[in-house]
Length: 329
Image (cartoon, rainbow, N blue to C red; front, side, top):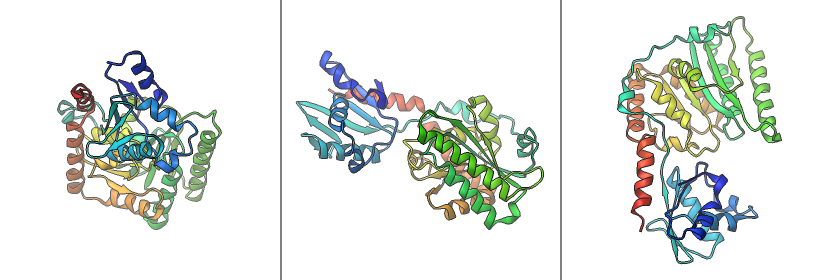
């Protein structure tokens, strides 16, 4: 069992040494469309390396389809769409979706954890607000954090009654800052935070709080369980487990999830408010919808999403993947 893109060449290397070994590779990031992947100078080597596996897993069927189309364009091979497999050099590789999840079971479903009021969350920062939204991301150009902040700004423009009452808290872990594209993203996120906060400047209140460091799960838990909603604005994401962690934390089946349609989780979590993060206007409206949603609707949506995660947790993900590879002759 091989995990992720760092080991793209490994399946073929293992097969050369151990032809009878059963090999699976799970790919954690989105697979691009064939045109995008076509610019890669080593596309044939990467694809041949991966196709050394008996089974290649992606988060979604959409990414499986992109991979098969890429192979069809780039290699002398036979793509069998009826069973999502590739025949090449006397070997068959199956391409299947395995949506990854989190460790959340029925035992966890009804755990009654204490819920902190938003005012208590904000007191540590010397601020006050009646409503709180939360975002948890690596500060990465694929996460759409600037787009998220523009949505918060537009929401406050359209709904001035929430100025002084609503604060968005963004937990952002700096990532790969030695690379210019990543350090530029950190700067852009900081600049937008400062600009928006200056625009809506008020005593004892901020529109956005940016917590720019790595936080442990224990540190994030109070924000997950106490915020009125979580907002995920990924521009491109394999799954996004933050969405599932937030839903799992809502033991009172309240709150709302605003979720980018470009995150794999949007295909499973149908109770979320699904957005296109590039559409700032609609994303701002989604914030209003989340804050105005009745308790009954929150409960209905959140219960449905939590049951999805219980049924499709990390244990069922691993079991399904292992059963599939074991069944391949």
